[in-house]
Length: 80
Image (cartoon, rainbow, N blue to C red; front, side):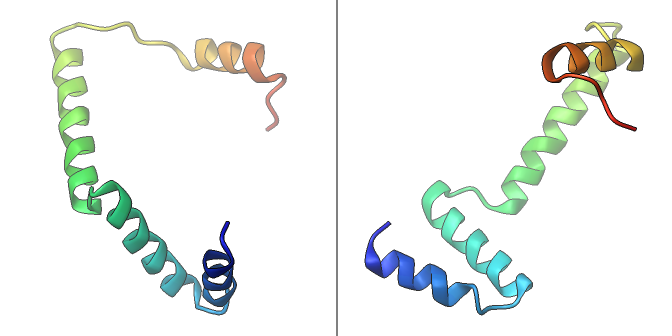
């Protein structure tokens, strides 16, 4: 990180959590261009698509046990 970027980061650490979150969001939007509203709308459309697919009987659904087995196989024993 450049000295200027490092100085900005150090200064940002003195902001409140809310201010840092807003700053991070504004910086991210300046890079990515997507707003939170656009992201939320995209997720809503995806959720709707998945619900409609489920209503049509499409897709393969896993039980909780199957999900846990896959997670344990990949990451090790799950903790309660």
